[in-house]
Image (cartoon, rainbow, N blue to C red):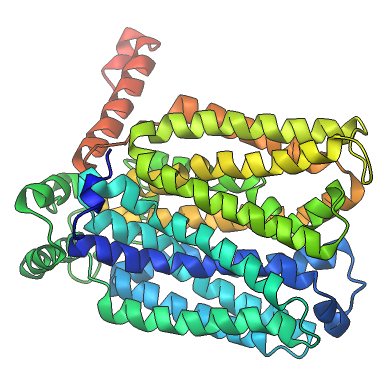
Length: 490
């Protein structure tokens, strides 16, 4: 795909996608801030500098289980109220949590703020990709749905360098300032999302509001030809086989995602979003200062700066990933990306296991530092983009929000495990965490090779047909191994 569609005045649907994606900045900033903040001397002085690795992991990861719980219901909320309202509510709650962290006077209050922040994060983050999927033409859906990931990486940069700039302030303002900024930005984005994000035309159509859907399509600047490719009418493909149809009081059921025709896709999305975290990416992002110190950068300032550089690298490589994701394809991106991630993790683990990394001399520590950067690059070009887009693309309209946010719940749960155990593993073994993450990346690539159906450039109708054809083909293969008398029963 060339750059020409983006060089002219952008149509309104692109501006709407940019505003929607901007909310991803908040998640990136939180991820970029929490590691450096918990390593600041004023934070340690106020809340105790002798926390062990387990306490450190709990502080960092306390946002994640609440996010997983609220994410499970985020799709249901968005199906009832509409995508923009669901996003706006989640961003507002997130901002309240950040404000509590900014004003924390005890460690319990700080952790409580992260819990509130997590509740909001789970409500809005998964619905960003869902809304963009539903207002984007097929020809630009891939690049546009990677927008939240690009803003997440920008948030990492902003978060790291905000902390780098405030870390030398001789007061608690050094660690409070980043949370004040996050809370203020959250309120601005919450109001902007509520006022200016368009309702999903596909959501309106599914709720029997076709005239309003047509009006939104017109305001978004999507042509008749394009909207016909992406707009599915409420027909047999959008209603579960055992459902009598959609009614006004029960448009979407919370557990429709487990019905026979979609549960395989739900399971695939949940697995991919979970194994994405088990690659170890948030272990790298949350604990980058710790990883660089372990590799030999003993100065906190040096490790902060190295963490900021890694965030800049991630942001830079996400841009070509955004532009060319449709050219590379989802399936190959996840398979080859998983292999690349595994190789890097095994390399780092092998260097530590072989005692080749020394803090004050030798090339081993520089190989580890460069390898961490390469890991971040590979992840940003492959799994960071393709997994989230794919999880939303493969669902039919009636389950897209619920299934996508359930997949995000899986992501949060495994994110929690990674954030909790990484400092513990690093304290007990220099190499164990890397071998664990490398093995999980191999498993993710293998599952993708066997079960993924390519979705790049396909309309939602075509994706639906591809999965139905795959199910029929599996039945046909299974049929071959049944006795003749049994085949008629299928």
